[in-house]
Length: 365
Image 1 (cartoon, helix red, strand yellow):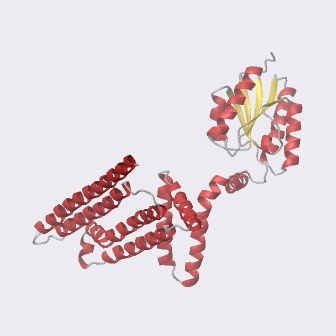
Image 2 (image 1 turned 90 degrees about the horizontal axis):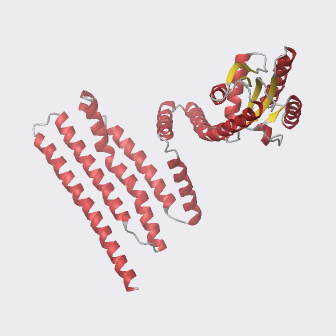
């Protein structure tokens, strides 16, 4: 078995060699690497991996001239950059090392993803040097331009971040044209904040599923799209009512008092917004002849939750305002909790009754 001491490794993390040039990796040897670089250059002359491969060949030639026992290797990942591509790179490195038995390596990279590639190689062989290939006149300009260019070309990045950014810039331009920058910017920042919150929590699919459901309902003639629009309108109205409620004369005395005024002014509008899709779903199920069971529990639970929040906000408001009759606030809270419990059990009872009726009917059949 050929025992090379130093290998020059050129890594194509997103597998442009395979996707564009149609070559299988790993590729071992100068002639095979030169042929791969030529084919990739013919397929896409702007690909930075072409320059990285040629640079790796030049590093290999210098090592040979210095009488260093060396070999050049091209390994590639996968177009699904991330865990999949990194595992493929590790698999190919294991294959190469089992053939060559090297004790050290020189990594040649285009510089965009060094931090991701280096740990993979270091876990298998000692890295003596990392050489970055910069093609443009200015290294910093090239690196920045390259990263931005690759990000914009990455479908995952462009589909995730460019639509909100484009919407933000478009609405900003409209607001400046019509002199409504303050109001429009407030709305835009609110929606961007919601989007970033969902994205950070890994719940961005909620928006996608909501859009897909609305689109399907539009084509199928269901009422879903109508109730979604109603929900959005109710949320906007509720938010407006909440903001107007903050303008109470004594709200400036305590920050938390402003919050309770906001809750009192908006909570039932938000409850209505939450109920709209539920009611729409029930109507669709009635139209399609489906059995309505657990929807009743959800319906009454939403109303019960709104009642508790409203009662709590009333109680807190009276306490913060130092009302001469604080007992009234506790009464609000007590009866709202009691009413919420009754509503919840009413929903459970109705669902149980419907389920029993369905079961009885199925047995008779």
